[in-house]
Length: 117
Image 1 (cartoon, rainbow, N blue to C red):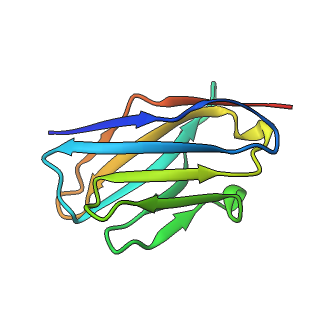
Image 2 (spheres, helix red, strand yellow):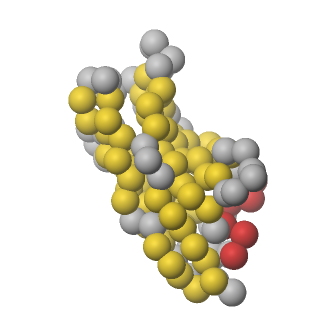
């Protein structure tokens, strides 16, 4: 079992910044891929950014150049630095942990990000 906990959401004005954190604990393996997804009401959950165990990142086109994903050295915590935020970034942001070998995935409860115009 892997437990995933997000933190760092909140309310910010357009053009501002927020930093999200996600910590995985329990039966965590270093060969994991962790990432951030977001979902608004009546919308499908979509990838924002993810980072692999070799530290290679992958970003949605809509956030490239504005968001930066990173992880700690023990590969159990990831961060999402969100700059130049737009009202369209308003959503609930979810963290996903996926084990590369078993393909099992675990999700956090989500954290609300609200960007006011």
